[in-house]
Image (cartoon, rainbow over all chains, first blue to last red; front, side, top):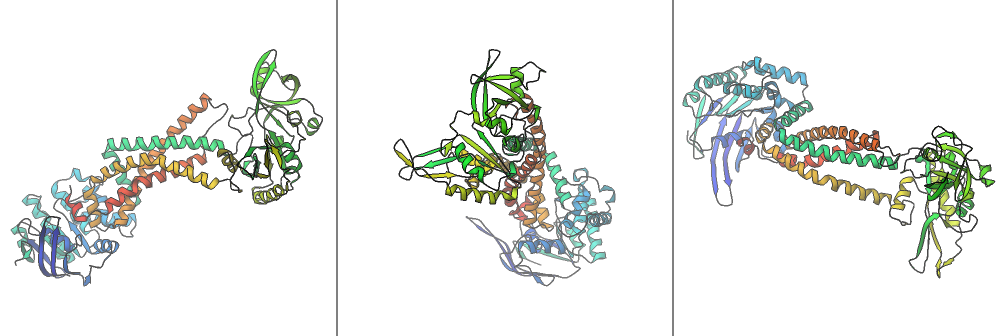
Length: 221
Length: 419
């Protein structure tokens, strides 16, 4: 599903060069639930951003669903992300000015779908994460766990094949964290969604199919 | 999609109330000024009482004679002789109004001294211009030809000279030490009217020697056509006629004037020709350049509040990094985001525009009720509202494009990191 070959990412400023990822090669199969662990600053999020096409590698190739993405234009990248990928962030990144339902609808705005269809799909996604009763609430009226569930609903509403989750339980207590993890595991099991999750939590990582570790930008396991 | 943009635009406006107030104040104040100026310009250039056929009229209001040997020129209205001998023989006009310049005259009634403005006209003047007679009727061709001392006066003159409620027709007023009989009373003219006067007299009563074969005089003629479509044909016929009018190589102050320039212009062309007080040697009268200059001034006027709004918009956008990152991550292209932020800005501008229109209506009422422009009634009509809409659009686009473009270039990862 995702193939990374010799991925290198260098951050340059006028004074220094930092090698964030060094020759990373990784294959992730369709339907796999992979967790990525490592100490802070080791390049986990950078790797996830590269897999999510939010950032470009300095060197190396990335293929998603057998397609090379390095030649994509801004518009093509946007469409590809919209169709294939869903994101869950540690700090939720909900739009506070929009209600829950409007937040979940967001990825569908960038497709050709009617308002009714968008509403239907967004309601179904919210039902899946157990938040049907919060559609008219604003994010500020929700708990952290509820916010993350809305974020998951937003990530799955467009039925992407891949979900990239950057520390989805990082801001939550253990009970809430477990709830979110259960939702992700269920998505992976029932919809065969490929999930790549960055986490600091060994227990959460142990529930996934495979764990890879990063240290100073290098895959160590 | 638009509904979503609208929702978020309104939410952002409500969230940052101070910024919203500053933005809306700037936009509505600017657009109010634009609308009031547009209302004045519309009042000046649109057809209105009594010149309601302006779209199918051509004006011959300037004649210039030049010397080839030096830079000397004489610039004034055409003479009655030129109009009578050449213009009146043209075939295309349906009617030709001839009127003298507007000159102040001291008049007396019951030893009451009044300074009024007087014009002399021909009989067709009353057919080309659509005056509303509140009493009596215009003087006739026969009365003009007979040299009868008759006048048409405005309501204002009637109320100054006669008692309230008393008919003026048939009564006499003193003009240049002679008694003139009133044949009609017309509704007051706006002071900005191109044919403004308080008293109208027959052309035969002017001081000018009407039979002197000179080209330059102090008259204007208005050529009324059957339809607007005849304007090019009329201009062509006029130019052919003007080319054949002989110059008599007149010598004034030892200068020989051997060239002439005279045109049949639309109202706007006539205005522009008067405005730069000279002659471009062509029928266009420099209207294109005039419109360009006015447009540049208009844009410059909008530039300052636009820059202000650009700064405010950039500040607003800085609050929305996270949203920008999320939208990009979930499939918004840079172009889509530019579109979104421009739409949002247009929504803001149109709200400001609506407030501006409301304020303009109030200010127009105040201006009209004060009547400081003597009978000129400006209005926020369809033309003015269309212009306001255009100004809002230009303002919204100008102030929205740069912040939107800058925001759309933002790196997704950086945007998501910002909180």
